[in-house]
Image 1 (spheres, rainbow, N blue to C red):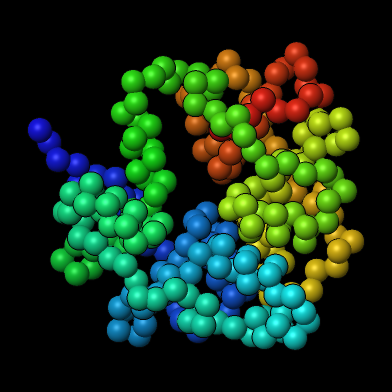
Image 2: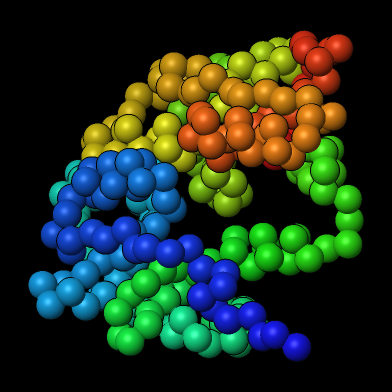
Length: 253
């Protein structure tokens, strides 16, 4: 029996960040590289911490007054990062990595080989591996789409949507009109454009910053869905019924 190693599941490469980078710089790096976390390295190129998009967003949106927001605006990656960095050797059996992550409530591990960082393994990597081994049909969008998703109305304030995302752990919100028709997607990447601002007025609505949704039929193939994501650099697509385009989406893939 072939043992699956961490190297087999990890995402190769590590997006780095300097400890004195501002949170605005952190936000830009997250957006530019389409990642959810950055690893902080010191001058000796040793990993000293990790900072995620949720760290940035939670700090921004859970600061309750102008004074705390002003303090946050001047913070650096070093001050907001989580430390120490949890690391694992690339040749460790994957089940050992999964057990360690579960026992210590860790969402990601920095993968090293010969003491050098070579990649990152996260909960999402294990989910993808388990899904690929499931004895189910995986041909159409309907076979794998999620039926549940977070939704808000077009008149929802950016601040309210951000708090809902932070509290629920969702990375995006489907914006709909009063009849349930999808208007757009409001995601963490959209929020990053506000990073560093002292305060966002409650009058700024999600419709002003959301991006246009990609849509696909539940009868489309997974190859079509994957190609659509790759071509448009999107992480999710709304699944709709083409015969009832004005109704709520059927799900998300």
